[in-house]
Image 1: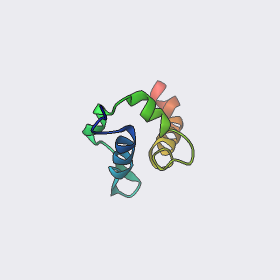
Image 2 (image 1 turned 135 degrees about the horizontal axis):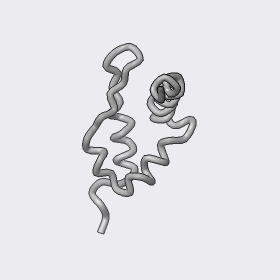
Image 3 (image 1 turned 90 degrees about the vertical axis):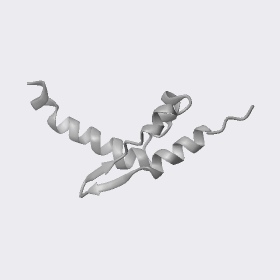
Length: 74
């Protein structure tokens, strides 16, 4: 039986759900993505350099967290 929502559908939904709310601020909190089939596998597939989600969300998040990590640990 074919699934109604494929992994590709969820990946496209994740990319399409990115919304700029302010300068340097993006909202990617589409709660429907919590139900993504094989969520960990799909999430890992968008965490690669050159993929828009990684470039727009993950990479800046990592850079920010690295810049404040020492202060947060204190």
